[in-house]
Image 1 (cartoon, helix red, strand yellow):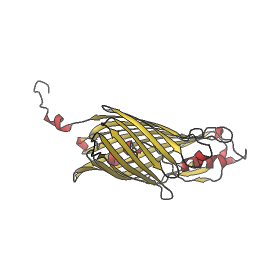
Image 2 (cartoon, one colour):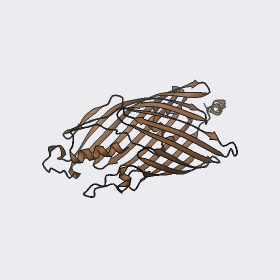
Image 3 (cartoon, rainbow, N blue to C red):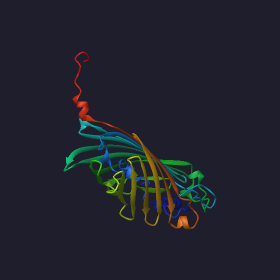
Image 4 (tube, rainbow, N blue to C red):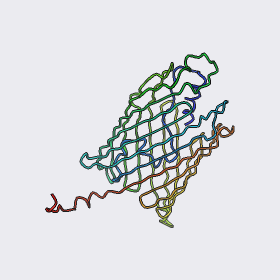
Length: 316
């Protein structure tokens, strides 16, 4: 989001001692990243799934001294169903760097599963730990004596929580809503205070087989993100051929148009996206767009077959 870069710029220019803006990262492969934003998704796919994302946003964006400010984000989410718990568990790892600021996060999630009509509903909760660091020594303040921008590397560990519900209708449709950073944890970095903002995510989509040729499947979806002071909308459309190759376009108003390509090889899916920056960052030549790579591995679990296996009395 554009507001994420404003955090770094605010620090660099020392315009304020109290920083509050949208801090949650964004990914263009949002239709593959539901586990990353909604704990209710944990284990809901009856598969052990690992999804890795690497994003370089606003490539070429630098300050007047030539220092790199473009955000780099890396994410890994692993989830699996746990029948004994009547739900699923998930582990999420995140590293996000924007200028002198580095954030490393760990998230643990549990979701309770229940049937709902023709589909299944997951109701989840999450505990997260975030280590936020700022290297003040790398800053070049306008006022060399500014006490807010003097020092070495400082960090603060935030603890916060999230809740969410996710509905999955087999391979036909999905919908979810979640709230992250519930307690809006606060901390100090140098002379500045920092507060996490509560974020709300709402997403939904469905798959439509092309009547003239069922080998083509069209998948429209939408993702709405807000921290109650600003909102961002992702409108996505993907076309999949023969359940193997896909391509798509996303539109993020006042930010970017995204083009995506990908392929599925058995249980592995690989995708690439390129964001064409449509905000003033792009029109002013400050950004060359954003690159993102997605890698997903899902190992399907057939619990019905597992339950039919008979114990051999020779092996207790």
